[in-house]
View (tube, rainbow over the protein chains, first blue to last red):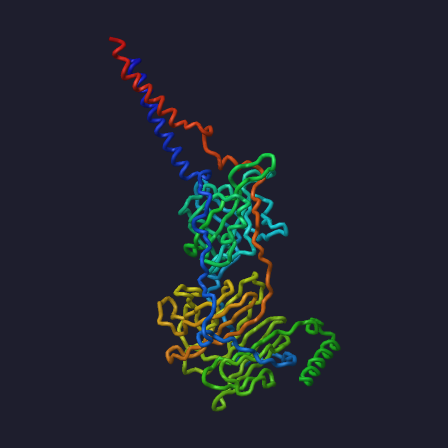
Length: 252
Length: 274
């Protein structure tokens, strides 16, 4: 009885364990970065929402040609008493497109916040990311956060020989539907993750929509991923996470 | 004109002679545009004591006027001898539009409102567009193809966006409504490397809304897209992209098969005992 029951019980435990491990493995494969699709879904070149042209002059607003007046007008002593020219105001300055200074991910294992610097493309074509992998870079050639059209591009080091894992390693934990908040000291915009995929680094420039100022407003986050070549000290792929704006949120 | 130069030179000499700051000498003048935004009437525009436009019709723009930093006077004389006059203070090197327009209250006199032009660089292929509300109309949204591009701009306010160059079919609707449009749909061309300024004028309730459009060049910044994003050279993150467990060995499956095997063995054992 004891030996028989023991074997049966052990068998059932192993079956249960096997089912559990297999299920976890399947889930992991579905969600894990290594099985992410390698072809982008949402970044197929979106048509700009502008018409190319070819319309009658009557439909079109005409540009006024200013009439030039020469000479230099010297200032006069301020009168102080009379009426002054009304100063035009900027409507909703807190809703204007902005240059980001920070990115936050929702709380949890992949949560946290990283400061964001302005970064540009180097003459050799590579993006000059911040050396410090705790920081991210906003590509100055891209759209501002909250701009009506185009890609706002944020990128950061997955890891670095000197400093270890970077903030961008947390991007690997993002799933479709997760929230990302991009902010400056005065305002913040919440995005929702729409797609994520691995892309061979050599194909990055072929996907022009990633860096385009046309099409719907979107956030494109880029780091490295895929197979690591220890000899070259480089990754084969880029991990790309695309997100769409949801709404303005209060600055934390 | 020559007289004015002499006058400026005289001021400069006085400033230098009196040992005052030489900053005034080096200061750049502001570039000021005066815009006649009152529909259906002609107005004579005067800056300081110089008449810069005689009987200017609506949509006329005069400028750029080189106004030295400091205080100036703008005056408009219109129908029936009506006169509007106000002090304008400008900063060195600024680009400023001064619009003569009607306020939201249609019975009140026209007034001057100034807007500072944002001439900061845009990236190649992009243009900056600013819409200023100088009409007798409620707060408005500016829509493109039915979507709000610029939301909720009220009288004497302006709103700005940087957009790809192109021709935009714009429509001005009362803020947060689906219309009917008080202006448009009408095509607005936005050129790359330019600031396009749109001043909405007219009276919405009388269906006389129109727009004055002014275009100013802005510097173009390089925006070459990166061809590579080298974002990792340590290898510490490589594990994040590797499957858990030994590659090719489905641990769960092995456990499952072994477990089923043992369970079957356990069930079959009694017979051998008998």
